[in-house]
Length: 370
Image (cartoon, rainbow, N blue to C red; front, side, top):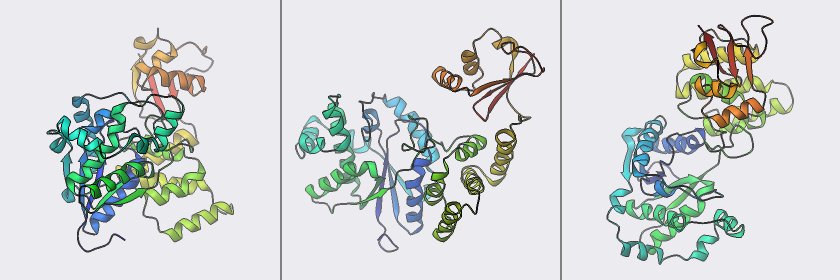
């Protein structure tokens, strides 16, 4: 059990292959912060080498490689968000390039000689891809070795990771022992299910809640969660006592309480954590106005009618930044999630006029003006 006593070196690595942190990452970050409060030291390893490969954990296909410049840009964004949860003053930041920058081919060969391909093909994601005759790049086989060597480089006492990282963490433990170090303990954190209620939270799956979402978007996404995830999110992302969680569960199971009320409390708590109480309150008011009463908010972005009058609906959604991409526009239109709210009753559906409002999904609006 980790407690007060000799400060432990807690390893937490991240690959800045993307610039965003989402609530799925926060599950582990919260535990790191709790351990910092017990006096332990967090060592954050910025995977500026492994990010160029991309972690193959849970992947069904080979990832494209990033340039070093892209990795550095992502790292800057990632660390800004990381320290919204973890105490910066009690964190030591290390970059992989400090030790891999001087690695030679001889070092790589010596490192790879310690493990076999057969061992790595036992890993679930590699085994599936091999059985399905899907490509596995040699660089991907190197990834667990490089992550393992990080533990050797900093002499980690404990390494943190999600349950899908267990193989990588155990390789680090084994490599430390091979190299005469005390093998690290592996601290595995549960995987947070995404807003779809099915798969783990992931930006690539579109089921994520990012830390830098606007208060309105963050609150609304939490409110979109299936009721079955309410207790899991409370447990992983808040400090609500277990006794209170048990009472919530009993109340929902017996239908003596409305899950909507618990979900609103969860949305307020999460939004206030990453913004502030006033922002959370404002987001709740807008949610009730826009989603529950289906009113149009007063303060919404505007766009000149002349700039979009000749565009298709998909093009209009992209131009007005109601969506991030043409594929998202097609998806929303196909789902019937785009609405034109005419300022003039009886206006023909295809016609657009100044004063009309375009709604994409439940919470995104733009008003057309002259």
